[in-house]
Image (cartoon, rainbow, N blue to C red; front, top):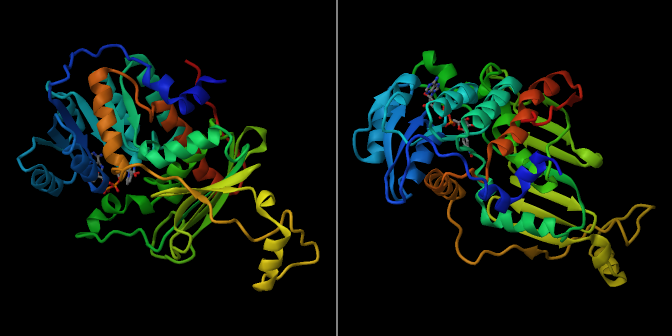
Length: 404
Ligand SMILES: NC(=O)c1ccc[n+]([C@@H]2O[C@H](COP(=O)([O-])OP(=O)(O)OC[C@H]3O[C@@H](n4cnc5c(N)ncnc54)[C@H](O)[C@@H]3O)[C@@H](O)[C@H]2O)c1
């Protein structure tokens, strides 16, 4: 098994990966001073969750848009030292960790700089905007031996962990296909107080700063597929267009992508912005069953062939199911039974809170997180290269994790 597949898969082995001590020892009771770069929508959410983690102090913020500083002060309940240039913030001597939530084009530069300053990093997805970006972050983690966590908080959802454990145990046989949908009714456009701020506020809508729906939403789904298949995709092909929002944006308002994994396994990703019927869900199809993962639960279904009986066939026909000439009760029934829901013992907390809590614990214990830099690489590469695949319609090969 490759290092990547081990890294993507094994919680216990990842948790056991101690990192070399950084310059400043941190005791269990010490405050962890956090600096946040890019406290916009996601950055403020991270701050909100960090404020719920004992021992965390929001020590500094950096943003190119000054009004963010007052918003952060209000959230934190005190004035937080503020910087417009990330280098000035990083030169503070009291920081213990940095969170990065800027648009993706800046992720690699800022993460590498923070690690070179001896600081652990929680980096929002995606790891990098380009393949070169991703390689730079991987190299920096290896060289500095710093802690790096990628913002794939779904890895911390208890029902997703339980589901993927059951899939790994063979509960749906061999998983062969992952179909992920991110269907919304949302034009993705933000209102802008001044036209000069269009690109700063609506960076998601322009190719220079955004990989569009594949990068922004698909990266989470691709991460799920990587986790399920225990590997990184090898190819990507797809298409995109603007079907509804002809408003000057240069990224598509819908995307369809097919990712190829070893052994012919496939992942399909679809995002549309003008109909939320399917919503956000990931279907995993295996040789002996299926499972649907949503943002709140998961439901397992046994393979149809095991459930079908003559009686259920007759009942389906009686209630009006129309069948074609080749209809067979064994493999074509539009019936999937009631399913077996993955239940949680207690109400789950927001996975972003769990992800933040675990990152802070990693900083204290000097170990690499579950959502490691390798996890980030495996989802970012298809998005980085996917931009060209969607535009040209060509099947593109994806590079594997560079060897150490
Ligand atoms: N993990 C998740 O579920 C999740 C959810 C939403 C967003 N995100 C990610 O978080 C990141 C930010 O998304 P968002 O919706 O919060 O965007 P946003 O535009 O709301 O916030 C980005 C902030 O960064 C600031 N900024 C821009 N350029 C900067 C620079 N050069 N230096 C410092 N600050 C700069 C902006 O002024 C803004 O305040 C993206 O990478 C996005 O993919 C992750």
